[in-house]
Image (cartoon, rainbow, N blue to C red):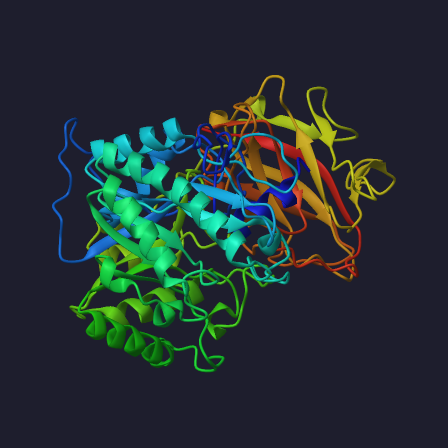
Length: 570
């Protein structure tokens, strides 16, 4: 399905982004160019903040005692597109956020590789890196709307991430020669971005992120800091990891302006009390250890990443990103509230940078289990803690159906402008002419397999969605029902997948009878506004068995779908 799962697994696990050229070695040139992927997102249009657009010639928000930040990752549209600008105006500014972190990312091919690659070439196992020009354009736009910028380059080992960190640790087999080659390459890599930061008046520069395999080499890191300070004259920090409490092993904090650490819920023990008070107690040992380091070095602590996925069991503190559980926006909201209340009023904490939002305007909402807080209960918590604008309830018009404009997608067969798309590696393909129709002879049978789902494409021309108000179809499920059947629209007209939010098919508000009734045809009618769709284009829609990470169940019975329509309304 357009490499849907591969793109999302790579993008969300790698927590990185987009495209340039050239391997960084002591004599190499540094990055340039751009990328693609996007994880489709979720349902339910978020409440609309009461918001006045920024003035045409704004000045930067004043520096404050507390940094209120968020990471903007380009999962899909580039950082310098109108899509990213819409996210900044519609979600970031109204939240009270004053700092935006950008993470250009380069790579080692595996745990033995001493090179650092920043490339747009199709090299197996490598991702592409955001281009210099795209990065500069994004910095300039953020400054133009008053936001301050944090540049936080990432270095990642591809194989470690693809294997869920199960391979040997990066650099674990190196001798002194290999380490010095890698550090020489790292200085070239980080100095390149330090020059971009200096030339574009970036407000804070992060010299490294979660590199616990190397930070015990104190003198090598002091060499990096010295090289960066020759180029960049702003404030510096490093982003330590949280799960091994890397901050405690670092001895070069005195050479930086802040003690930086990421903060995720990898607690020493699983949490059994999921209340906000229970979470606050669980955070105490971590916060106390940070305060001790702050006192030791006489420097404030900056939380360089903090976030939570919106899924069941995240608040146990043991749930890794690649483990599938159901959407749970309240767990994410509770996690944010507990953390914010834990750090509130501590003068030794400089600020917090949330992880993360991305460049798709239709991100978030119920059924999206990623880190973004947009369109979820946590959005209200962020607005409250950061002093953002109040979020007004969304009002939905009572549309009146216009049968004359309604589009038939599938009746006895696919309508003329529609076609079926399927994953080339799929072992089963949807059967468009199953002899088990709703009110006719045929229906679409979807066998539950690794690529369960039906992908219907209308790309010539793309659909103008402004006149359509509902997606309607009939569904027949068996005794072993699908757990997470989702509907999502896509737009590929720019060469990048702009996915809509997702709608859960058996939402009681959508499905006739309020729940699945095995063996009975039931009507499903999903308001397109719940997917964030108002006047966008579309090249088709998918009905999927799951979204990454996939909670796949081989025991699920075949699903039948019939009488698919896009219903017009006014």
